[in-house]
Length: 289
Image 1: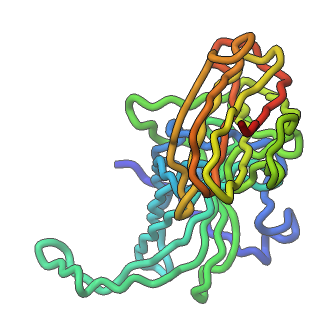
Image 2: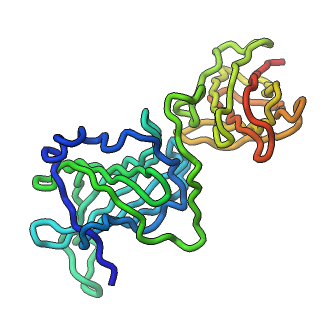
Image 3: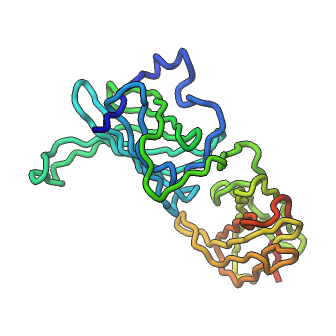
């Protein structure tokens, strides 16, 4: 039988060691599907979390985390459910999850969904230092649970999933945001010579740009330079990106090039290096006919 560790520390106790909510100021690995599985603190048995990384188009990074935390409180077993987006802050990627606690029902077949009480418990945050170490932070609004953090290590891996240890966020070093919410905006009036300099710092870097059209226009969108680029065009509506077009090598020297008839609205263009191509500097143009 697998037994999880039991460790609950208050923010007041931890404050002498490290400020709350900033447990480890070091590079964080990009949150991936390979982080799904069971996590626990190996020093004490008794509790732990099961985390699952899922795709979700409404998330700023396209990913969410669903987390189940099995623990104890005042001698009684409790379970918490947390769901939230993977976001990027000054330290890297973190899953920020609203957390609920459930009570008031019986064991099947005596379970009645109408009798379950769903209570907002607080906020839980999860980030990963590498493929096998993570930090779980929490702020509860229910008396007795408090605020704190817990170092956890991998217990199980979901079959068929992998974790790339080299996908490390580099906060402060990226010239353009990686999501449409943090994108670099083109000027409202697009002209023939309107371009923005870009740099892919790593092979995994995605630079995102946004622009808004007040009326229908035909636009040429492309990059120039030595970088082998891939461009993907999205329309943004209802807080969601919908793909319109994608191109790899239609431009000069393996740059992407696309020409599209677009309606009024807001759009994003994702520029990333080709999988096996040269990456580095480039210029992105948006031209009107």
